[in-house]
Picture: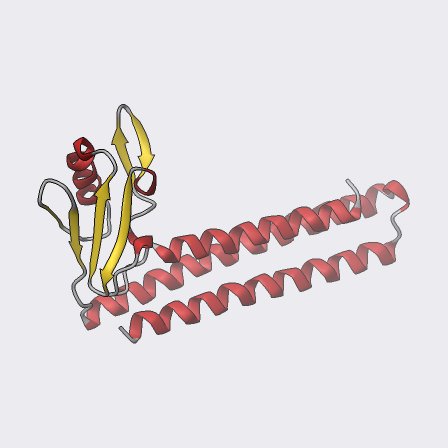
Length: 188
């Protein structure tokens, strides 16, 4: 594997870790209504798991309410079951056509719990980034050991430096997302 390929693969893994963390943060309830709380939920629909966003129109008419209007009204009960089975902690209210989810304000204890949860998710993403760094460095070490493809020791050193810079860059992105989410949790 060429030096550029190794760096490209490492950067792709790191970017995927940041994107995964960003998507996970969308599902963290902060006391404000946001479609990201429910759009990723999987609903049992005609024998297969389907994402809620593919089955219903989801909107937030106010900061404390999520409204879900299924495209197929017969799926209403399955959507309710999926919401109740999820870990978002909201109880659906249905009128037979739409589902309303009231978002209660967060207590101080719940805010601390959410902050700890978000920090744990951030650390898991950092570990994924560091694992990508480790894998890239192993590949570079293997290239150096095998003296493959005319890659010099200077190229290997530059490659390792680039991997470290990528690691720092993507860890900074995780830290930025974490700080923003913590502020959002505290300021609701």
